[in-house]
Length: 221
Image 1 (cartoon, one colour):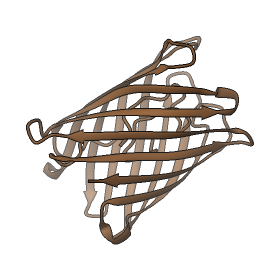
Image 2 (cartoon, rainbow, N blue to C red):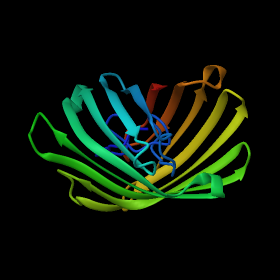
Image 3 (cartoon, helix red, strand yellow):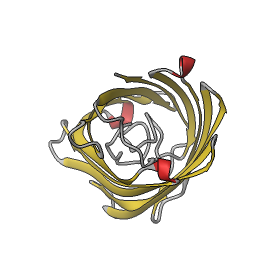
Image 4 (cartoon, rainbow, N blue to C red):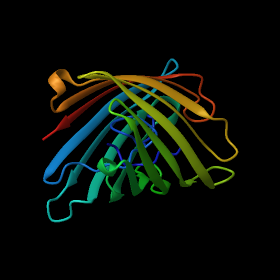
């Protein structure tokens, strides 16, 4: 999962995610002793887009803590490269019925040399059924260059496993004072193994852009 908070909460800037380019975060960390790499490319309108690479690992010595990093290259009107770290600490595993965590991240602009954005969020995961879970987020965001640099962040997501290797996702999210955004997606995990492929379609992910299409791939090892 990517653990950088995008300045616009969209896949064209690093984001929290319940795996890959999802905006809403879940409560779970990577399996202790394992790592994964999230990658995705997004397209907004005719010329704007971005590509992100984000590795994350959880050690056996600290099984509740996941560390991550992300590098993102944007092109078009928001041309820039953002880099930064992230973390997630799991207080209560989802296996108990309700998962609870604290996740944080930040990003720097290599173009302008300033601290670009940050996000601190509490993810809550509810397992409603063997095939259905709900992720709820509440937290704080900071964005350089906005009229209101500090804003509250809220998000909700539903995940539904329609088959052993296919799941659907729907999420809504937004910052205080901005229009709400939404995203729909499908995830394919071939053979239920260590690779996920995501195809996502979003509206107003940054509060204004009409639509964004994202293709993501996650490798676990």
